[in-house]
Image (cartoon, rainbow, N blue to C red; front, side, top):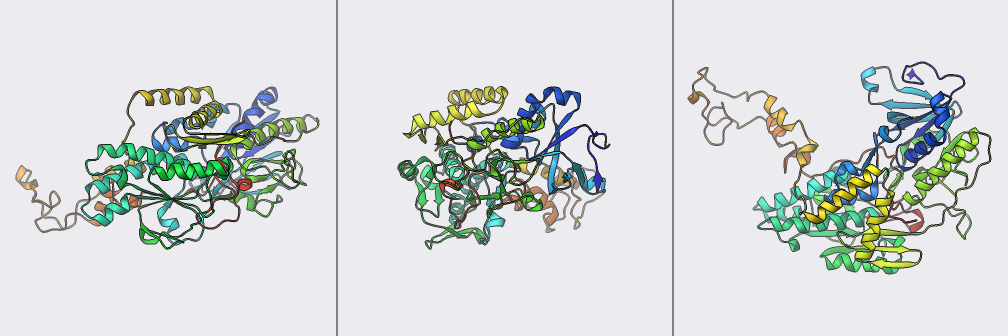
Length: 549
């Protein structure tokens, strides 16, 4: 194991205070941003060093993932580059695999760990900010790991958009009714913000796209929302939840309440109500759980696996340790009933980060800490273009007003003026021009074409040494240079050719496995008790930032 403290590999200066921030999501980025503003002089002099360890070099603004999937916003505009905004901090791209707070050390695996052949990096610190976020919570459902895709990352949003359009290409070109029906059936599991907003935006996009297919009509597309409880979007209230169900069903979306996904093996979604739906698309948005690194620490955790915190955002019973966001169980001091905790949503995460940074600075300077207190204001959700629901300060909105409020609020909350201007420009251009309906599925396998070109020729060949044009003529159905009747191409060549193309083996399901590391701090639901296909109650839900001040 390598022990290093700074880019030059030497030990930390005795008089330097190092703040280690684990995670580059909402809490991680905003905490570092506030620290570099409040400790500007100390960081310039070298008295304080802020190190951010994160799996990705960017923070994802998750409320815009549905619009990125629908093509309303460019994917690169829903992420914020950490090195640009945290120019006074040290950003390390890697994952913390374990923490020993008693020794003030963290074991970090970086992108260069395997190349160095020296083991992971051991990083020392003085103050710890734990904000690794959460990862998708899956259940042991047959076929789920093989065929489903999540909706927590920008990569999943891009892949899902490409996959939906690809399935429409398959349905348009096949002569097999069974393949066509499976390609045009899309099953979303989980009726929280992520599931409902992703379904609404993608259905809207696919319905628009169908006008450019000569043999696909909007009613040919089958969209199914599976929810284990008796309602969806509980954060916006029961009345708005019922309105959302009516709105979705009016768009030919099959909403199955009190229903669970029991299997999706062999590309057949089996539901608890006995339905069997052949499908090539299963989107899992039914819950999250704390990042695995929390289990590899010596810090106190609650029954759900989150770090136990005080109202001042310090780790309970531990000095020089702080936590917030998805990973933290923070008491809600504004709640009427005792013992209630802050919901793990973006509304709290952003504000907790500010208080955490202020308290950390106060601790370094010997000043008293203040409690985190923020009363929940309400929620907004988009259901597609010009459609939405909202419940804010007791007022209920639906349709265009709610959709407009959703966009306005999140435009004001997306970090940096650069991103605000780019998103606004894209929305303006989208109102003047038609939607983009291009699938760039080959981006997921960028080496496929080159691998095909560089692959060796077939073994069973009968190529002459003659360089005349006749020597390279082929008969229909054979590989150039192959003898008539020879195998068209070896399996390796066929796999290389099919990679990244519609129906190819690596992308036949159009889905990828969710990443093992979180860190965005804005997932859709917390790790609460639920059945397959269900969503957590309002107290435990993660709303991907669709809440308002």
